[in-house]
Length: 209
Length: 241
Image (cartoon, rainbow over all chains, first blue to last red; front, side, top):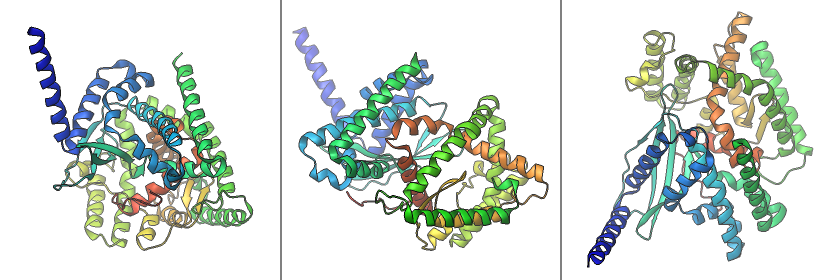
């Protein structure tokens, strides 16, 4: 009986928190995730001293759920995406996801004492696409604009692009990807991404020891 | 660098370099990127610049960043930023934004006086936001297209339009026009080191993110310029989606 009540409490709690998460506006959701992540980093010496692997664990548990990697990959690959087989699409998405997660985690290890300010978002009823503007502030330097493009699907908002000072992290790969595809086709691009991902892994292991 | 010679000489030289690069482009192999018709030349120049950076500029910027206190670095950055504000203001007027232009000139007056020769950015604290304009952006506002992408020796990525804008920027630049050669050289070097030091955190990120550093930097530069011309409000590029 006790166990039943406990189980009921857990289920209620879970469904409540899911409901709350899905009802959050895109900027509120991002603010919540950002606050959580920065709180962890501030208290984690290893991340602050440049341990990318630890930062990646944090990103995997707290951040990736809010990103739409298949949309991101589709945007970066461009018009060749339509010609990809489901298997190629999956491989491309997996490899590109690894690359983005590591880049993002790596950027987190550079965190000093910056604060993140969210600019007001004017969200209309029924809107399913939004640009959330933030500013990274650091004493002594110009603030850095960091904007998130988000879309609503299945009742929750997910990020499909990040722009740093007007440079889109996703579409910035388009030029590279299209020349890779021209040279070696979609499989050539998959192979290049794999090589890059394994090279960087070896590199970060080497720099740690 | 232009600091070691008179401005008009360096501008003539830059023009010659652009002319040569465009001519070389006609015979260099391309991968068919229409924004980058002289890719072969650009890649070679990019490699040269990377070498110069890793041996000469980056180590100095690293030492500067490691050993100087934040207050000093901020003072230096603000000092040069204050000079930039004047031309940001001029360009805002040229782009038909007199409100922003007046605010930029107001910033210059306030920071040059209360802000001790521009070293303290008092104006930002009282709500006059810093803008970022140059002649390349003004030409862009006026409807001049990018033209081919060019990697200049030492100065790095530019578009043909921004190369011309950059020459105008240099021509009116007060630091480059200082009569005393040693003062001019020292200030020019300090400005380069200060700007490079602020970019240090991006190095590792770019190295790890880029499949091909050349095209990653090129496309980043082109996106950044596009965003600057629209003052950060560029319509989303939906090409090829």
